[in-house]
Length: 558
Ligand code: C2E
Ligand code: CA
Ligand code: CA
Image 1 (cartoon, rainbow, N blue to C red):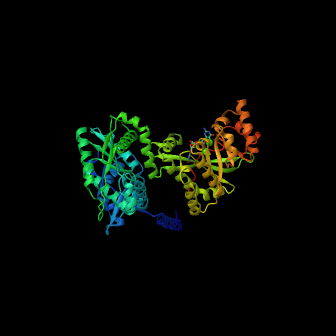
Image 2 (image 1 turned 90 degrees about the vertical axis):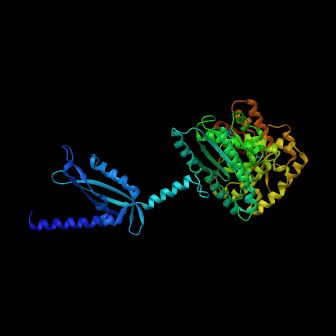
């Protein structure tokens, strides 16, 4: 190679270096080098031991020091990297500069050998990952901690519990489900600011009582869980719970007020009532509800007898009351399709109860109880208001949509003064009543018939539509059809189920449709699941179709 060639080669190298420098700067990377020197005395026949001083070497360029807590880890990783045949080094650690600013860095390195094949140094590149780490921590915090009280949430408790369970020395363990009695009064009487303040103080109190040996978390608004460990026996556990409830009654959490509250507790025992988190939580919750049904400021231990109570009327009633307070009722919408063009014509609103521990509970399970206890009025009000609120959105999603249809039950709002409620909602949500339909069943009409007819007439006068639900399952349907101001009838699923096979059902459906049309009523076929059912209804000139064939009830997004 002559002089000129060597010159140009140097220039190319310099140019390359400049480019790599720029590239590194651009991606925020920094280069480091760790020189190694073999320790002569310790050389054995296969490999040499090396000494290194990473503090000196590695950080020299950056004027930083490594966080004390990470030193050991770095040391270990480096030694392992040098001694083993790994060809890539990867470490994450924290560094601090002279001003005590710390950051997270991610370093990668490779080994460099000299001409004789001895390990000479490690060279590497590092990048600042502080932002990513902070973001990850924030995400972890958000998904594992309750922002108001800073207590772990249910997910985190579940993780911590499974870790705890794997430790051998857990003797006694109980799930204490704690619920503040009448907490909604704090919010209602003093306002949400005080409510939040109270919850924070309450959380502090629990921490003070149970940290650090036990797990504490917040499950929902005023529900807390303590996973209590290593107590001596049931007597000492119950003694502790009893003292806790007594202390609470005496405490005044809110300054400048004389507000005093109490709490109720239900508890379940690990290995006796169950071994997994969900079971223990569910049983503790059942015990809590039982405790609440007996009065305030008490505690109850779960037993199998309570399992039956969980499915009993009394518990359901209690739970419905809580669900109304906590907005656990949500509304699903099921499309009602135009038979000829198969486009969505309307939606039926169907209530769903999303119970925090039992999951989705179907209307069939709670409506009869809610009707009997008078709670149906409140549930129906929630559904009606939700439909008014969502109407604009539904119409935006589907501009051709003509109505949302809402169920009114026998013992629900129809018995109270629904008219004023509806008038208020029309103004509040600026809704044209022609977009809302109400469905009533024949059995609703049997109760208090005169009052009901009067109410339905008024509803109709206001411009709402009306339909007769579950048609064909009742008694004197034809009379109602003639005398009441209905716009539509809804043919019950039990007819539709068999129209493809059963000649009589087929005939019934045919004549109901013909008769309804003659009376100027439109017909909706309900519970249509198959194409053959749809095709038959098409031939029979049924106007609209509702059923899983076109779509299940679903929530709509905000
Ligand atoms: P419904 O008014 O007869 O409502 C139709 C029921 O049939 C709904 O059950 C719906 O999910 C179901 N369904 C619809 N298409 C199909 C299908 O193709 N196959 C099958 N197997 N089922 C289908 P859901 O939602 O469980 O409601 C049950 C009953 O609870 C309703 O019967 C209604 O009487 C009552 N209900 C539901 N929501 C409310 C509400 O907000 N207020 C009042 N008062 N009652 C409600
Ligand atoms: Ca219905
Ligand atoms: Ca129906």
